Image: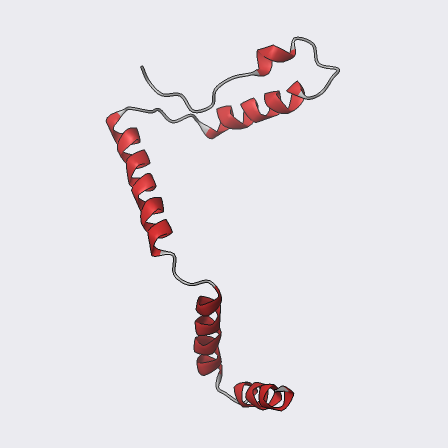
Length: 96
């Protein structure tokens, strides 16, 4: 087995770069086979979220506000901060 493996490696090393690239791609695909069902679910979820944004079902929150809230929440875990419950807030709100 070791001889066949070393022969195969020698053969691969002698291949042109474009063929090596194709070979690597095929090997990686064989290790992580296509997950069409998962990909389809992801696409469906993205489409739902885009629809929710476009129809106004949900609203966006500016990045600065999100990072400010993250900093507040990080302070929540600091025992020296008083009134810790004031730092709790929902970042993704659905409109009523």
